[in-house]
Every structure is written in C-alpha cells, then in structure tokens.
Amino acid sequence: SLIDLNWDHVFFTGSTRVGRIVAETAGRHLTSTTLELGGKCPVIVDSTANITNTARRVIWAKFMNCGQTCIAPDHVHVKAEVRYQLFTAMVSALKEFYGDDIKKSPEYGRIINTANYERLLSHLENVKVLHGGDTDADERFISPTLIE
Image 1: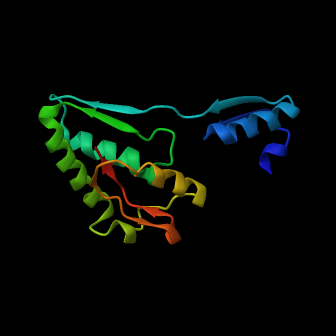
Image 2: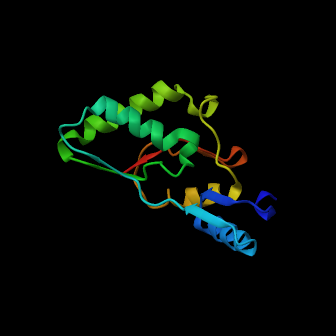
C-alpha cells in the first residue's frame, strides 16, 4: 500500500483509527506526519443571519460526499426565533441541490463502507427525525437527515 513506501512527509485526514495505522507505519520509516483527525464543526445561527444563504452553505458543507469530509458541520445551534425559517430553508436547499428523489440524484453519493453505514445508522436511534432518515442497506444509502 502507499503508506508502506518511504515518503518525505505524510499528510493524512481521516479517522483516529486509521490515523493510528498511518502514524505507526510512517514511524517505521521515521517519516514525519501531519494527522488531521477531524473534530467538532458547529454552526451557530443567530437572528441576524441571512437564513437562505446560511441554509444553502450548511447543506452544501454537510452533505458534500455524504458528509464524509473533515469540514462537515456536525451540529447547528440556532436561535429559537429563526429555527423554523432555517429548517424550511434547509429542506429547500436539499431539494435544490439533489432534487425531489435524493436517492436517484447523481450528485448524492453513498457511504464508503458497511461499517460506516452501520455506525451512522446507530446515530438515528432514539432521535427525533425532522426530515429524511430514509435508508437502503444494499446501496449504503442514508438520505440527508435533519434531527432535533
């Protein structure tokens, strides 16, 4: 694999589990590494925000590559007085970007593997789904889902 080669420097973005493998393997060659292992990416929306622009940007960033990026927002803190407006604008942005049947959209991908699909499904247990939540195990499809 690529990591077994002798590199000048390895830059890795991804999970902590794989980051450990990369660091261990690179260490055998004394190769310097930069590990970007993600973190929390909150969005804060107050009453002065342009709700339409905010919704479009959040939806784009969250669902690009099905959210499998290190910059994907993982939660939104929103002022109560603009909560419904933001939710409505986010649903509109989903339809704008992916159409009425997201599963058929060529712009919306699938989860990288079964283990991650199952991990993500577990996040939908015991939560209130406001929009989406459709799944298909055979395709590793999870529709864009907004939860409370």
